[in-house]
Amino acid sequence: MTSVSTSQLTLNFEPSVADRFASLETFIAFRAQATAKPMKTQAADMDLSPSVLSRKLNPNDGDTARFTVRDLESWLESTGEASTVIEYLAAKYLDNDKARHSRALSQAEQLLKQLATVLPALRESA
Image (cartoon, one colour):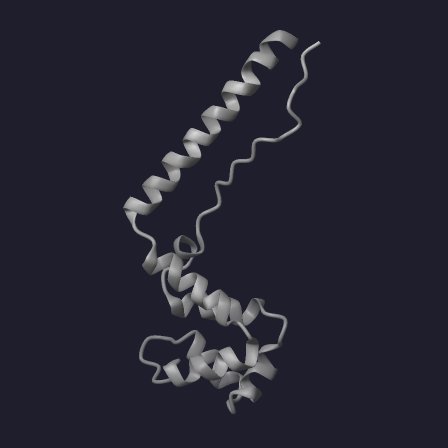
């Protein structure tokens, strides 16, 4: 009797964080809503009203309220989201086509090795 490996093949088709958010501004606006700390508390920690923070995070055309570097530092202190912001920036600016191609090639090679070990067992059991 042939034993079949209990390891499982997993494919991840989710886009990277840098692919999901076009800019740091949109990423921070999303994280401000997603973090455990309520927006009202974030705004208070930053000495802003909730409406001003909301305007800064989601500016309309012609709106003069802008999310500045000073705001970013205050927001990071308030929310503790520094690691997620750094991960976003690293994914967007430290990754390049050559590195992505190399990772994809490596993943494909690993998948082929896994398939090469699983296929004979599948053929035998059929």
